[in-house]
Length: 200
Image 1 (cartoon, rainbow, N blue to C red):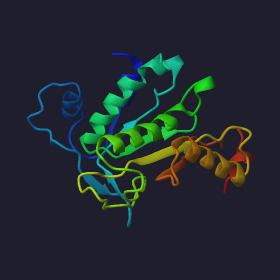
Image 2: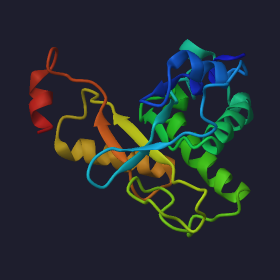
Image 3: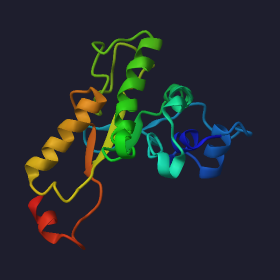
Image 4: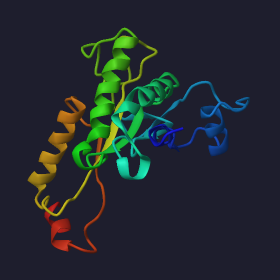
């Protein structure tokens, strides 16, 4: 299996079932004790997320995962499987993707969800398909994709405005009107404390 497939299967298990059982299911081993679909949990007073999430670090990363755009169809097949299982939460970052592929993971997440919607007979106008707090849609079997992206505090992103513009860049790549969750990718406090203070 190539690197890109490994990346999508690097699942973050929040509280559904033991890691070994979850990975056995994904790789086709015995699944007697594993639920057939992923449930949801509350993530605050108004947010509901899937109990399992999926990481996208390898999407676009040539250096660590030997990614090539020719793998996109294989990645989409894995994406469809986890979506069909009930996974809604996807961890990504504006820095996922190397060099000319910077931001590739976000681009693929947006593209894949629009394709998935089309395959199950929904359109982007059918409910808040991108919204973390949307609990009901026109299709009761469909739960909206929830993107948790991380914004990289590059040295040139010093002010709050720089971070806002990076979030807007993520939205353009995702082709979505709203981020479910936005996070600072890493702290600069140890090597550039003035930048950390500028983001407050």
